[in-house]
Amino acid sequence: MELVNLLTSSVITPLQPLQHELFKQHQIEVWIKRDDLNHPVIQGNKWHKLKHNLQYAKQHGKDTLITFGGAYSNHIAATAAAGKAFGFKTLGFIRGDELANSRSNWSPTLREAEANGMQFRFISRSAYRQKTSIAFEQPLQAEFPNSLILPEGGTNQRALIGFETVITQLQRQCPDWTHLYTAVGTGGTLAGLAKMSHDHLASQRDIIGIATLKNAHYLKAQMTELVGFNDDPSNHPIRWQLRTQYHGGGYAKTTEACIADQLWFERHFGILLDPIYTNKMVHGFLEELRQQKIPPKSKVILYHSGGLQGRPEGVDREGKIKTG
Ligand SMILES: *Cc1c(COP(=O)(O)O)cnc(C)c1O
Image (cartoon, rainbow, N blue to C red; front, side, top):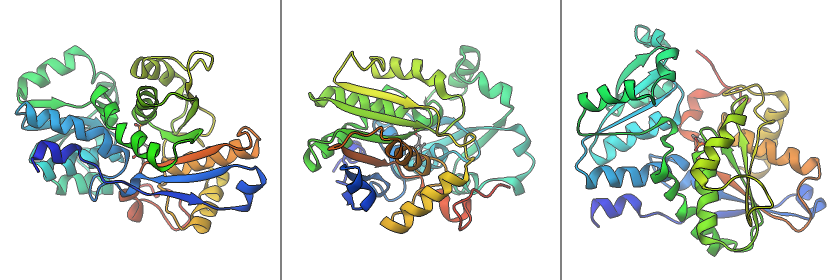
């Protein structure tokens, strides 16, 4: 198969039923879509967001991928791995200039990205906020004329198309699903799932994003722009919603309740969650179930977006995030 086709071909990941008394009591059915198993190196939603961008870069003869992220960004790790696998140089702009001279404080993510050949530029938090400005991008394009610049989290219109395979696979695996829960960072995954549902499905669905960052309300406007319609439920059979109350203190922070739900889930179903995103997705889903927000007869899909590559070193046995 040609490389460009290889980039967008997808394995069919399992849709696993989750059986539990709690779900019976609420008269709902629950499945987990195992997209943590979709690609050996570039796992989960990051692969979906990258694949059409990689194809575009190949077709347009680009030799370098440039992107942005924090020291624990799964997108940074994924871009570095993709560069190595598909023959691109990679450059990562990392938030936090204090990291430039303190290699010993580098996260496992940064070390792994470096091992995959990524070059870094560490920039201050204020410079990082300017990364999408013309004043930042123009000199960068001039310095690397043959590069593709990917935004933070890899979220752009090409990224959204990557979720088409998820929706079409679900169409075969459980055509009458009613609810889908996914974790939200930059919102690209939620936007992609909502937009591809809109393009492929006719009947009503609720696609619910659990924000993992604090004060994520600002994402709603960006989401509306990406998806092409807003979250007004009267508008459209495909209803997307952003829940902003389950962040547990913010990015990479957590609460006792969230840890308890994660451990409960992992023990009962034998499926690992990551400590930043899918743990909060599961916690948010369980909270909504306990609050009777999911009607009887619902068929709920939990979207496992991956993120497990950071887990062995990144968390302790309680599922808490190790810092430093
Ligand atoms: C990056 C990431 C997310 C967030 O995806 P966005 O498209 O940025 O919202 C969710 N889950 C996992 C496992 C991730 O690595």
